[in-house]
Length: 154
Image (cartoon, rainbow, N blue to C red; front, top):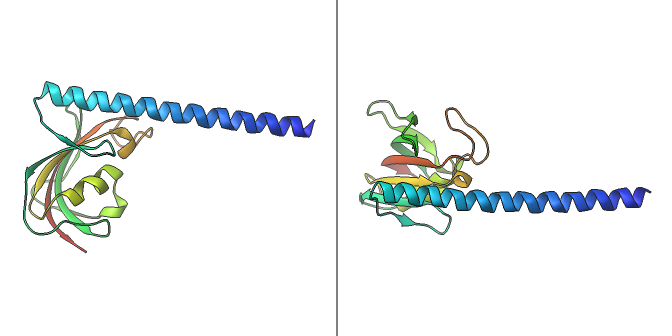
């Protein structure tokens, strides 16, 4: 009886994991379609990264690029695809962050920038907050960030 229960439990775990993977794949496809629709509706020509991040470098900036171990100083505005702003730096006071502690979309996108540069990131939910809601951000939300990389240090 115990062996049968263990086998049944193992089978259920495998099925649950398979469903979770399918849900992740479906969400990734949905996010990609949402981003592509947004870009088309707003006539935005964006580059894409293999991770699923879309981005537009609006000002090249100068100098080197930050890396995962950098502390970055940024000005930014974060919004949803419906235009609702959920976070921003107040005024012209940059915020300082350790890049490795930020959402994965920023960890991928910010190293593409140079000091003084600006960019817009279109971040699929899996590179943002995923299926977790977060302070004004519904679960599975595509995020849009306008970012100026004021400075960084390694």
